[in-house]
Amino acid sequence: FAGAGRLAAPSTCVVIHAPVGYRRSAARSAFFVRGLSLWDASDLDLCFLIRDHFSIQRISREAQRLFGDSFSDRLFRGQLAYHKDIDYAEEVDYMPGCAVAAETVKAFLIDRALEGVVD
Image 1 (cartoon, helix red, strand yellow):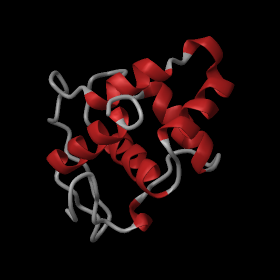
Image 2 (cartoon, one colour; image 1 turned 90 degrees about the vertical axis):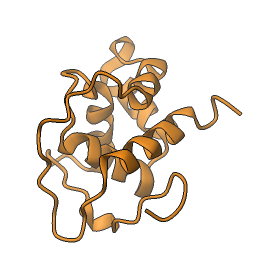
Image 3 (cartoon, helix red, strand yellow; image 1 turned 180 degrees about the horizontal axis):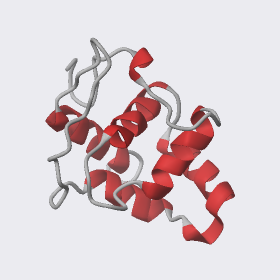
Image 4 (cartoon, helix red, strand yellow; image 1 turned 45 degrees about the vertical axis):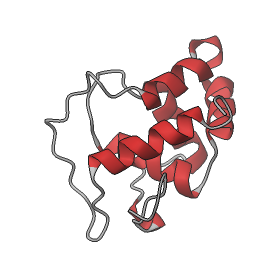
């Protein structure tokens, strides 16, 4: 952890689960985030994509393009910031040198979700 809202893991830690590119993968993750109230590698992928590649706004624009009215930027931001009822039982298999504490990821996602919304 390298300060508030910053993750120290290198950008090579992103594991894309679909061969469609970072932007589309980020948009798909945005659409499905918290769908099952589970903590998994998708949360971390989305976190690293936000940190290293795309703003929340850009991800939201792509998700809106892909999913139309089924996607809500407001709901997406709320899901990124909400962690109360999430099941953390699933162990995430990190790439070597990429482990990040769940609390660090949660703080980062909350910070970015509120960016530009709350002063």
